[in-house]
Image (tube, rainbow, N blue to C red; front, side, top):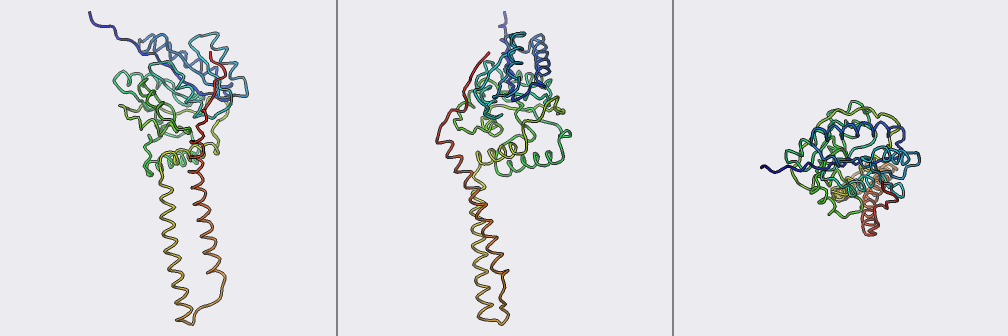
Length: 317
């Protein structure tokens, strides 16, 4: 008699912050998807959806509680305060009980049907499956240009990231346990996951418009996430500062020699403010930029040495 293969338990982790407009539809679609996967015998019937309420100020948690009451497949985890999308995602991943964990945003911009393709890839032996957008046709020109430019910049700086991949991915239990070994406070998952190194592949999907509600990632948060990605994985900006310092020093030396030559060996020296003011402004701007970059790295060290807990769980369903 051939051994019966154990179906993997799937947990779908969904970070939420003020998502009351979209949450009922998200629950409907994810529940239907789970039922389909269970019926097709691709995942175990103990599979579930884990919502992570990141300190929402609206009725998000009430809706999660109601969904759990109506359908025990829906689980909930409430953080004690708003900690940001990445921390909420980490809280959900580290609390998930499944053999396989898929993370997806609540706004339904990511195609939930791609989860089935991820499960198929996992069955073929892949322990990390990235959800990658085919195109960015629903993004504004600015967002598309800045996002794609950011991925290219990270790769140029030596940070290994998957182009056009955000936080829609599948992780096996072994991959997830490996990620737990990374102890830094600022855990930039888009850069950490490729470092794990297990067999991986990508699933491509079309990204849709947000189903309802407003984006929880304004420009300020996107810039903060971008800075975290750079300063967490590469010292390249510090090396650029060193190179700029050498170039400016060399340029300044050339200017000194030129000024001395003009003063003592020619009659064309004219008094003026340009030769004084321009270098002052240039050097001042360069110094402020360098101090700012250094400050980002010092801040990283500051927060890492504190070893504060990332989050606290107020309630679980």
